[in-house]
Image 1 (cartoon, rainbow, N blue to C red):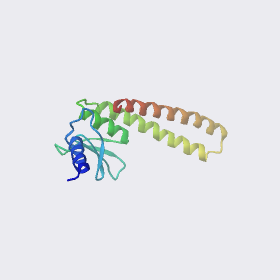
Image 2 (cartoon, helix red, strand yellow):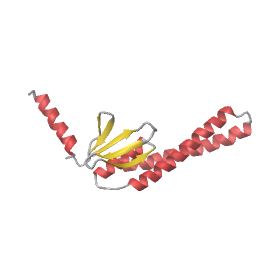
Image 3 (cartoon, rainbow, N blue to C red):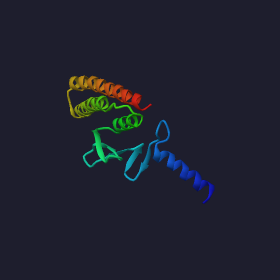
Length: 140
């Protein structure tokens, strides 16, 4: 065994055993692993979080950032699932609002309608950024 192979094997064991205080995410197959949790996208554009030890589904979210926040905090012993899923749902609402307003601005011929939708779009984008920042705080 080469020295690099031994080093790689030791590093892989550390990652898989979760011996670090802040587990490192890594890609394994079609999922992202953080400690004993796996994160996967399903075919309905949902992100699923699984407990690999108990082989159970922990939660479903709409955004990958929410799934990462939940898995990271569960590996450190904090259960923020409910709060993160509330933020996820709110972020989905504002994201969908932004898509609607963008489309209305694109197809509307009335300048007043476009102007009001532009203001609403700015508000929806700002709220989405704020919610993303809140989720980032759970990760970092």
